[in-house]
Image (cartoon, rainbow, N blue to C red; front, side, top):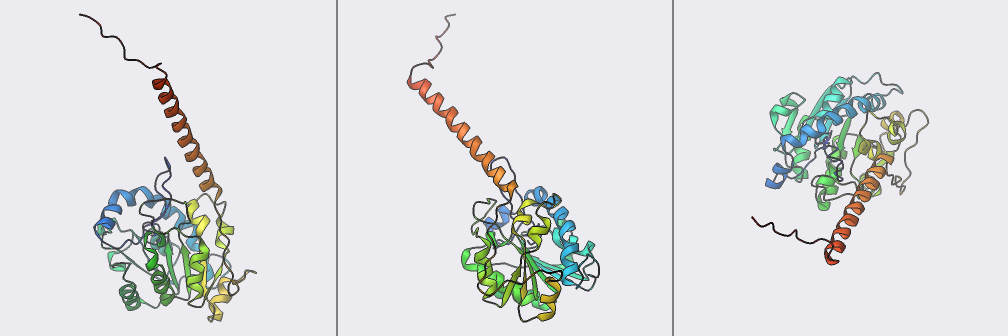
Length: 304
């Protein structure tokens, strides 16, 4: 799912001890394991944060793609979300003035949970890149494609295919994927952003790293998006590059890689999880020592 949802729009946030699932649900392959992993309860747990994040981020993104420095003038922008889950980010896009939205994700997505019109969604196995390209192409073209916290749910061998789908769909891509150690349900390919930027670069796309800075402290947006969101733009589309870099931003140079960042909220969650794990180990060690030392003995039986 892109969006949270899936973002997979709903996909991928962390699952540290006690932290719960975050992110988007994304594009698992649609096999039985994927169906079980992305159940209704999974989406319920994350969809509120995903929609809240989308409502904060999409006006800005559509404003850039639509050609303005502000959040207006985005009505003509069409958006496709690859790994859309229940459509949180597409709903946010629609509310922010997108002219047309469309989402794809696995057949496990429950249609009665969709936040968008069912006609704007098509079920497709995200591991079959050629099929996704065909389905998306039939509904295109689009000005913006996006995939949020989905890539970590796909096997490494399918990463290039996912990027190929996104770049074939639009000249501008909003992309976010879990970094190593982020944690989450069915995360099998967590990578630093440099991994993904190489795949985009191979298709003629550079990155503009403005969203992480602009939303880094915005608590409306879930921290995994604030940590991982990047815009990719087709280098040979001068108009798209000019719009997305408006206001003094720059497109990355060939061979340049995005900074690998860890958001403070992620760091603190990891630190808390580690501290609690160490405390449990210390407690267990005291119990073992007590048993070995004979301190803990069975109570004598009482005679009737």
